[in-house]
Amino acid sequence: MTQGRTPQKDAYTLILDAIDSGVYRPGDRLVESELADRFGVSRTPIREALQRLETQSLLARDGRSLIVASLDHNQMAELYAVRTELEGLAARLAARHATEEEVRVLRDMVADDRALLHDPAALARANRRFHKQIHLASHNRFLVQQLDLVYRSMALMATTSLAAQGRGEIALAEHLAIVEAIACRDEAAANSALRDHISVAFVTRLKQDAAEA
Image 1 (tube, rainbow, N blue to C red):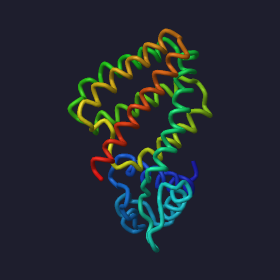
Image 2 (image 1 turned 180 degrees about the vertical axis):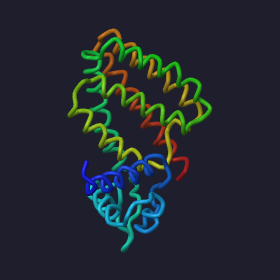
Image 3 (image 1 turned 135 degrees about the vertical axis):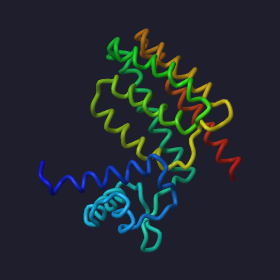
Image 4 (image 1 turned 120 degrees about the vertical axis):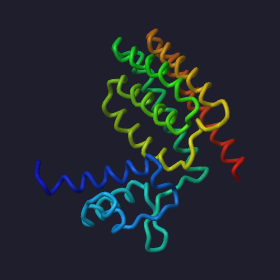
């Protein structure tokens, strides 16, 4: 691998992962020199990574500064609308194409994630792994790519709906229903179960935002 391309890719991935993991949250200012020091990368690939993230609307301008973007109510509704359609399709295709091994992994994930009910942040990470596994089980690379873009934008939400009282337990029950529909090769039921799961998550998030406001 050539030396010239690696730093740029690494810088982009490092910043994206930091946003995704909550190191940088919506409204936080990103400074080239600070990022270069944090990640041990020169300023040129950091600058190029920031430009790429701004193009993807993950960063926004605040005067001359770049900050981690945030989603207003309409943007969040738009994101959930797209997510619902794409994830429903992923579940439908997973019911059609998932191998027995992939179904077993999904079942194991639901069982293992019960140990995380006391830790909303860890449960949120596990939730993303679960959904990613469904995306992969769809065996449609173009759908997986589009869902990756959706989940990048999901990182711009400052809180997780799984932090709401009782939501974790309910979400795991919804996950199990999705897995059972996939295991039964019931495409319509898998699609419906996942769409319902996203709808409940959206309602929960709206209630969270209303309470905070």
